[in-house]
Image 1 (cartoon, rainbow, N blue to C red):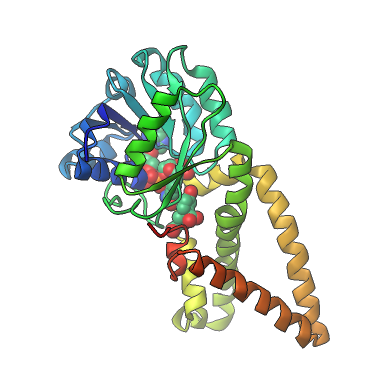
Image 2 (image 1 turned 135 degrees about the horizontal axis):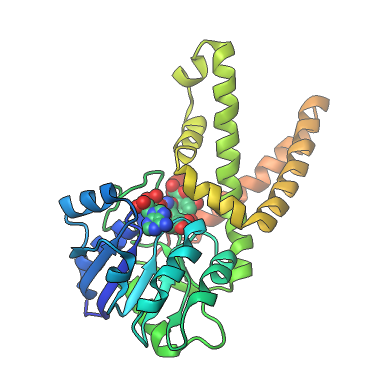
Amino acid sequence: MSRVYDRVALIGLGLIAGSMSLAIRRAGLAAEVTGYARSAETRATAREIGLCDRICDTAAEAAADADLVVLCVPIGAMGPVAEEIAPHLKPGATVSDVGSVKKAVVEAVAPHLPQGVHFIPAHPLAGTEHSGPRAGFAELFDNRFCLLVPDADTDTDALERLRALWRGMGATVEDMDAEHHDLVLAVTSHAPHLIAYTMVGVADDLRRVTDSEVIRYSAAGFRDFTRIAASDPTMWRDVFLNNKEATLEILGRFTEELFALQRAIRTGDGDLLFDYFTRTRAIRRGIIEAGQDTDAPDFGRVKR
Ligand SMILES: NC(=O)c1ccc[n+]([C@@H]2O[C@H](COP(=O)([O-])OP(=O)(O)OC[C@H]3O[C@@H](n4cnc5c(N)ncnc54)[C@H](O)[C@@H]3O)[C@@H](O)[C@H]2O)c1
Ligand SMILES: O=C(O)C(=O)C[C@]1(C(=O)O)C=C[C@@H](O)C=C1
């Protein structure tokens, strides 16, 4: 794979930035990857494990001279970080991000960026429940989608280079507009996470009543929920605070369906339950036929 950028700067050194650095270096996509994280402890860990070619003590130092700067911080930190690096950006550089919400990130970041800097938001549909600089691995983006959010004014060369970077990291790249992205992800990622958090919370409340049996005898379905509900609290707090409208819309629909199923159970309406589960099973089979892997945690993986 050939070099796409001379210098890539990653701001925020957790699961996604760590995986990006390893994937970029695996494929030789940049001459140098610099990194910055807010806490001295994270920077020390990143240095110790050789996560990037160079770890900087300020965001400005990491971003200076970079051809691509990727914001890999929680959604709520995107705006302040953009403001901090803005005066140090090289003319012609591209700024991108990996945030799980797009409209709020565009609104928070774009106003800070100077003329002559290209801003192309992105979202790799890949992750795990782990966070921090030790969580990254080079294969995270292999066969996953990465959604880019260009607009009508986006520079085509800058867009092609960012596409080449994500393809080089193993991802399948598609474009989407920010509002549509946030609605789709509210269905496929944000609401499911909230439901998992809730279910594990309910089980935790019940634990006191059932003498820990819900944990001891947790079945596969519940274990999947606990994996998802172990995800980073800061990241997910920021996702919900910044994709409020779409998430509330989907949760409203979810609650209505839940009430309908609840009623069917109470009234013994087996036909309704059977028909409903038949329909949802077909959706699962459709995902598999479309080339996505069968394991729930691999949702988002694509056939190449
Ligand atoms: N985890 C996932 O599954 C996943 C998947 C796709 C996208 N994302 C998005 O990627 C971003 C990063 O997520 P992650 O999973 O890598 O999180 P993470 O917690 O592993 O890493 C975030 C890093 O940002 C640092 N940080 C926080 N605030 C900062 C600030 N103000 N300035 C500099 N550094 C700061 C933290 O110290 C940490 O090192 C989030 O916006 C998230 O929505 C996450
Ligand atoms: O597999 C997981 O642990 C994830 O939650 C990854 C996941 C998802 O919901 O699919 C989480 C948030 C993202 O923004 C992208 C991917």
